[in-house]
Length: 179
Image 1 (tube, rainbow, N blue to C red):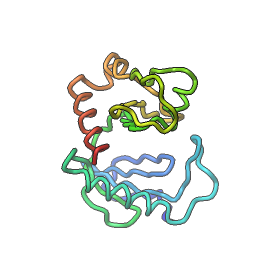
Image 2 (image 1 turned 60 degrees about the vertical axis):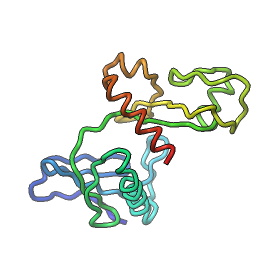
Image 3 (image 1 turned 30 degrees about the vertical axis):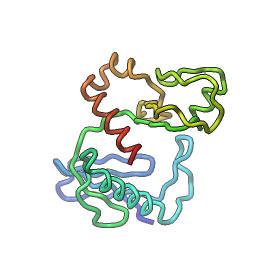
């Protein structure tokens, strides 16, 4: 297990999340993915060996495989637990694309609601049914605690992103979903 909490020459900032530690060096960042496990907003006491390597290498694979759809921050993976890349300002939204009525969408639907994140779901569906077309049900990315469902209207009203950026996010999300 790689445990980080280092201090490097030229390091300008440090952030420790539930499973990732991020070291900043001007315009670059080093992301160290630990073996820590987070469940229900708590870090569990026992890590899972090699979990960080698996998580980091899967992320690197998909970041590299999707560069033709949308550019990203990743530049190098010098160690199975470490990714190096361009420092960037994250957009604190999770763009959830759903092709089927399952999970959170099914629980919402089963409760009688037909609107999820401002998106209307058709009547007459059962668990696992395919939507007529994929829907985007975004969530805010919380610094602590749970992510929260949010609608396109609220995203734009709160100025989280501009209309232009929202459209780019939707287009890229649907292309990634298709891929």
